Amino acid sequence: MPILGSFAAGSGKGFGLTAGAAAPVVFNYLVVAGGAGGGNATAAGAGGAGGYRTAFPGGTTIELEPGSYPITIGAGGTGVTTAPAQGGDGQTSVFSTITSAGGGGGGGAGGQNATQSYGRAGGSGGGGGDHYPGQGSYTQPGGAGNTPPTSPPQGNPGGAGQTYNTPQHGNWGGGGGGGANAAGTAAQPGPPTSPIGGPGGAGSPNSITGSAVQYAGGGGGGSYHATSTRGTGGAGGGGQGSKNGSQVGTQGTDALGGGGGGGAGGNAQNGYQGYDGGDGVVILQAPSDAKFSVTPGTNTIQTTPGGAQYATFTVSGNVSIP
Image (cartoon, rainbow, N blue to C red; front, side):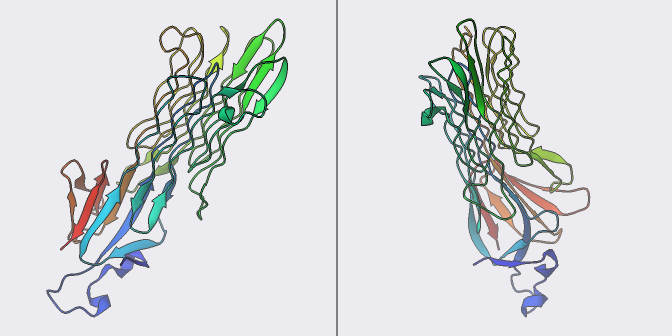
């Protein structure tokens, strides 16, 4: 059973073990879930980033006794390729007692109050999609972040989608997906002709490997009009949104848990397609003298510039302590 404690608690002597006996290992951790897929719509919401949970620096570490412990890496959610629908949610990543929730899928399209146009809740929430049919200005909400709730929060909400319909103009923008460090931004309908897809929320930087890397950025929302502006992906692996007729979106980055970009209509290259979220990652850091191994071979153990060891899991596997 894992024991929660401080990083300094990793000494075998501290637990009354005799010389030569197997010692437990104290781990710092970073657990990022899979980012969500973008929605499918005229201007779809982007996928939310995977949940982000960490003990580095200065958080409560986890101590493991000798044995083998499973690590689960959450896959990114699927970007929708057919029908005006929500993107797929990301999957959870798990280490010991720590579970990070997958990102919430981006909203598709639907009538007023139609739930398929709403962003879905998750580690970070998906952006809202567009409204159809009918004249007027409408807001379709983004999904809640930090779902289920953790302390500190594992993510942020998605931004709202916006629609501006008149007899002369039809302009739509999808909301940006939430990121670990910031909420997704609401789209701007930009009447009469320049809607802006919402940018994705920024991810959080972490130096558990000895180098600062940003993780769990939200995807950018799609936009519909020749003079529109697609939403940019949030720093930390968020995918770009689509712009109808000229720019295709991109998927979230694997091993960062980024949300996928939202789709947009009228694009011959990709139709209304939303984009996949990025797979998650688990990184464990231990003292330089700790004894442990990881499987399968796709996962690696390396050393930080300061001498600590860290294991990077990009596929599900096990960490074993002899």
